[in-house]
Image 1 (cartoon, rainbow, N blue to C red):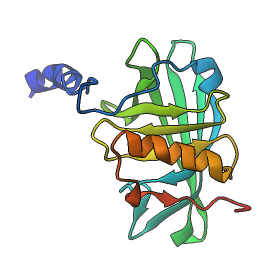
Image 2: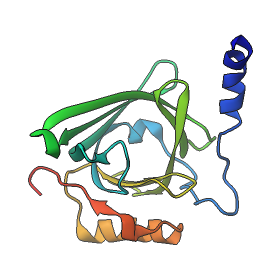
Image 3: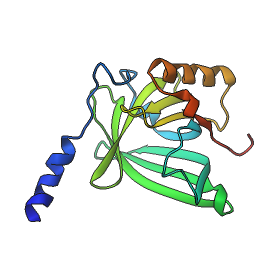
Length: 177
């Protein structure tokens, strides 16, 4: 058992997905100082941790903050529409897995990490498209709760170009929307 625990970090490290000819392209470079802050989820692929028989996340936000150690604190919040709007909070940590900071690894439960690849980013950092290399996760994020239709269409167009099945994309209910 002790050997297994000692080997676990090596095994998990081997699971890091590297970009290749069959994975989505990322934006190449993300200025993390500009990326940190508050984001609103505008749309997502349904996920077990946001959508289930007892959970439907609405009013979803993600807050990213730079840490002294170079990592990023991640705080995701939502209101569970199936429990009277009860707030749910998940706190995690992310680190850059690429020289351009466009591929991050995020953990909400150590030692398990997930891929967070920035595949689309507005030049002014007003919106972003985030996915995973297996194309099983996709989020459209915005600095504001609602997104102009032209910006949303551009974001979805990037996801289509990178091979995501955008027919699975569902809009996120946000206050005032």
